[in-house]
Image (cartoon, rainbow, N blue to C red):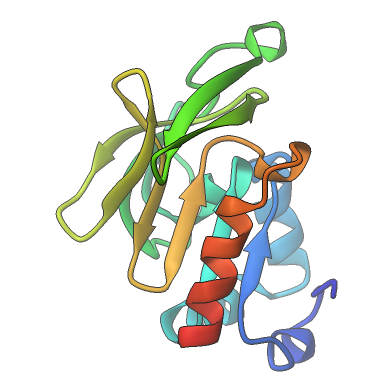
Length: 160
């Protein structure tokens, strides 16, 4: 279900913050007075951030610096691979098998702190990370037929 209000947050056991534009998302969160409620939700329940959602979950954001929820021990660089033209489809390994990863104006995780655990990388760069009940992906798992990433998050929600 779509969650757009503080009341909506009270009806879900986990939340996916999708890709998009993180600056615009922050403005919408401020307009709806949802930033603090979303941060509080994340202290108690699982959150999965993809692409722009990953930026929002990080502890620190660069290029440029911006506010974030600080739910994961990560530093993320916005548009780390470059402009829209630098978007790509790559193959990564997860759970012992190769899966397709779609990167669209994707951020790069430049620091993974000791509280977080890398689940998958693209080259030397972490692209799927978990920390406690939370997960981030710098790619868009919803754009492929593969469900392993989403299943992992659903398992987190069910076990939380």
